[in-house]
Image (cartoon, rainbow, N blue to C red; front, side, top):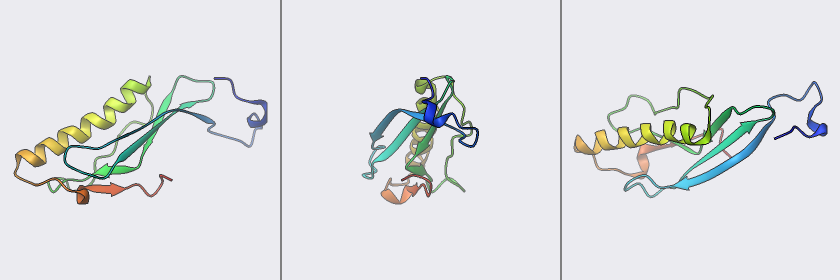
Length: 110
């Protein structure tokens, strides 16, 4: 997507366009999780932000997507959801009961 002329000022940085937004629930957790993916202006680079991060009883800290630079939307979504599913399944297999307390809201998601 071309950058509109109004956003081409040298003081305006990191122009992104919303490419997709999805909402889903993970297993038995009732809180919806939202993921927004953006395409950087003038690039194919995809970055995402999410409403919640998963932190099961087995995790010392929540799962964060380590890369913020993906070649496409499918790859970006897979990187986020594959990690969530793996951590969720490990905790359930260890005998923990899923709940909304496993989700940590993102302070940067509005």
